[in-house]
Length: 363
Image 1 (cartoon, rainbow, N blue to C red):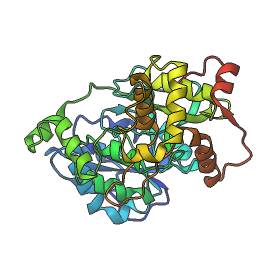
Image 2 (cartoon, rainbow, N blue to C red):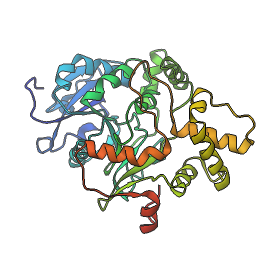
Image 3 (cartoon, one colour):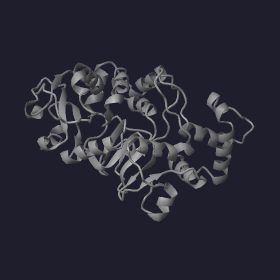
Image 4 (cartoon, rainbow, N blue to C red):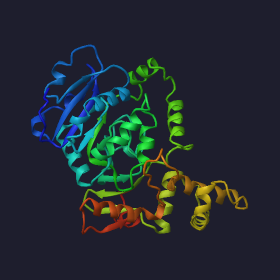
């Protein structure tokens, strides 16, 4: 362990025990752009698993309370780094890919990111699986399994972590606090999630008195004044393997393709157009009351509510800055994020243009 300030810009903190797979992360560590540290929950000694660690913090209990305790105890050390990665201990990684993940995340100026999962991984959200057509994708959600957190966004994450035992709802709320274009899934550096969901962390949560993660998540959302789940998780744009920047455009074809991808083909073109037209003309009213305009047909009403549900998240999270967006604003938001990251001179293709040019590039 070392208390000397590091010259590296990134830190990996693993909540781990004797069966942790983080040994793959620390291979060839001297050649990487990151340090690592352990939040150790076992009575056994970490032994070789702690070799080269910036620090080892011993704290029992579930993953998220343990990580919260570690990050607050060593906050002065953690704040030396531009990004901190909090991977589950059952992820198999290639260290050079971890370094590249950090580089890509930093180059894009992301607030919140994650590596994609290999196609053979256990997963919860299909969109987190690696997309071979992309280097990185802009999304509206980053999963709590392996978040990469920017230093300036860490205070918000710590606040959410302090309120959760199972971790359920942390990613839901955190993703609402990050602007479009600043939330990234890095496809060029996938990791392998080796174990089924659940396991020891849920056993530890039950031992801490939390038996139902669904109930805990709803309580967390309610405390932050949310009464509905986050918008459907979806890819909104990205940087292709060839280096092109792609985003959903504002055309009806782009919007319909995205809506159909998220909610299925039950949205007819006519119903969709009715929904978008009505939504655009009465947006302020809908923001006040999603159940207005009972004179609309059932199909049109459902479509309009679906557009609102997915693409215009209202409310505040206990006073934190919130970033609502409408579907047709996505290209401008992604372009602004790239400019903010210092990436200029790129042509932003719409999704339909790119899909027609390269048929394999699907959501």
